[in-house]
Amino acid sequence: MEKFLFAFLVGGAICVIGQIMMDVFRLTPAHTMSTLVVVGAILGGLGLYEPLVKFAGAGASVPISSFGNSLVKGALSEAEKTGIVGVLTGIFEVTSAGISAAIIFGFMGSLLFKPKG
Amino acid sequence: MIQGHQTWVFNSKPVILASSAVGGPFEAQGALAEDFDVLHGDIWLGEDSFEKAEKKFLEQACEIAIHKAGMKKEDVQFFLSGDLMNQIISSSFAARTLGVPYLGLFGACSSAMEGLALAALIVDSKAAQNALAGTSSHNGSVEKQFRYPTEYGSQKPPTAQWTVTGAGAALLAQEGEGPRVTSATIGRVIDMGLSDPYNMGGAMAPAAVDTIQAHFRDLNIDHSYYDMIATGDLGRVGHQIAADLLAKHGVKIPAKKFTDCGILIYKKNQPVMAGGSGCACCATVTYGHFFKRMRKGELKRILIVATGALMSPLSYQQKESIPCIAHAVSFEMLEGRN
Amino acid sequence: MSNKKKKKLTPTQQKYQRFAKDREPKRPVLSNVIRAFIAGGIICTIGQGLQWMFMTYFNFTEVTAGNPTVAVLIIISVLLTGFGVYDHIAQWGGAGTAVPVTGFANTVASASIEHRTEGYVLGVGGNMFKLAGPVITYGVFSAFVVAIVKIAIKALGGM
Image (cartoon, rainbow over all chains, first blue to last red; front, side, top):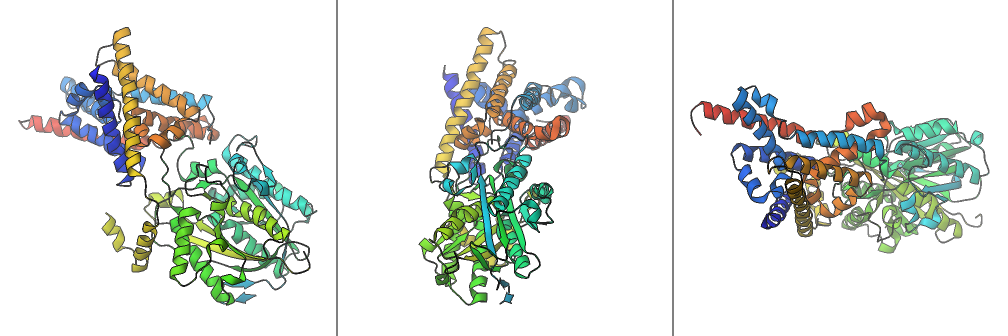
């Protein structure tokens, strides 16, 4: 079950990068997350993120950087199948579960909950 | 009457007939809980939004003050109020309920003393027999407007402060018994280029220092004139900076005489980072705690320096720094009358 | 970046800022980093566990198991946000709770819950992406640029 250990270590490490961005570089959470997503996209484009996912499993696929990677993956695989328009049509293909779930359950949250302050 | 550059001396010494302090659950667990008139168990007050609840806090504070003075709403001549909400809706809606001629103000967290200074001016110059000054703040509505949704998981740094949920009101009149408003120094806007919305104390400290120095200079006095000098909501970080900055400028106020409402209001074990903030911070601590001590005879002369950070959620996004202001009002108990 | 900003400040302002900075309690960076590591590691491990569960008991492949895993983590995050617990965990965990997809779900959920008071259409619907918007916008735009660049390089004959 060393996959669990690697998931812990790599996931923790990516979060540490985020924490350093917020505490040392004084970036806001929004800036930090956006940067991590863009980095994930770039690494995905360079073909470097997939090996990380293979190695660390959820340690690489759960952090927000994998969102960037998935967006690129979707765009490229669709472009390969249907030409350049595929970049537009395929972007959300792989990440749709995450985005849909966030919208659907986030909205349901507003139906059920009141802020606690 | 004006004295010096920016200080009004109120020769008729308007009297605070009554004052009120209303708070929420966090304040109920705080260090000054006993000095509040009413403490609520939740921040909603039966309303369905933070903004509506804040209005209710302010209405209640005003009603209590008016009632304690043995007056009715109809007897109050002017209502001056400000708060942190966009377009100061809490004050405006409370004014609607009170039905009193209304002057809305914006001084951010310095609103309490800004309102009180103007109310004292109105009463002292005989432009009215009485005037009511009030202010409020609400943790939920402030976080929602200026920072993040209250349930958002952002990590607050140690310089952050906790906005007080509550309201305070003070009713001034030409005659009566109670603490007297003797002078007010109107502050200038001071901007030292700081722009971290999580470090209001550091941004506001220079304004407090500037106003305190102006006050002493205009009246030709020093700290020995007062039993207590308290800033509004500099918090632990800002207050230390202010104390050091004053010392650097040759104004050394002894630590036991120089305090801050944001430090006093909460207990050390409450998760409030650097201390309390918000318009209600200065108001509830002054109108509740400090006036109580004055009426008991423990304090004769105090100076309250309310501090405010005059930025908007948008100005921060546009990379503007945070301009700040501080207004000081002095209160005295007169011999033999109280 | 800081030098450009400093140039716009007067000497008095610069002096004060140094004065204030000296008196500012330092952020506990080391303990924040450690806690972020632990919190982030735990969340990812839970994700790994969910993934394993979906692959073993529900016949998902390694690739497709990611979808229900992310969905479950999002549901958990929404519930914790709704119960008013997430912000307390996040104060402890910092980036450890913000960086995983749970943080993304928390931004959407907290904004939705907060703005219900302005109605479901303009309040919830209009503010839902207040905090998540940058992530989606920059994610999509950067993916677009990366994809185009990669395709262009391939087309021009060589990667």
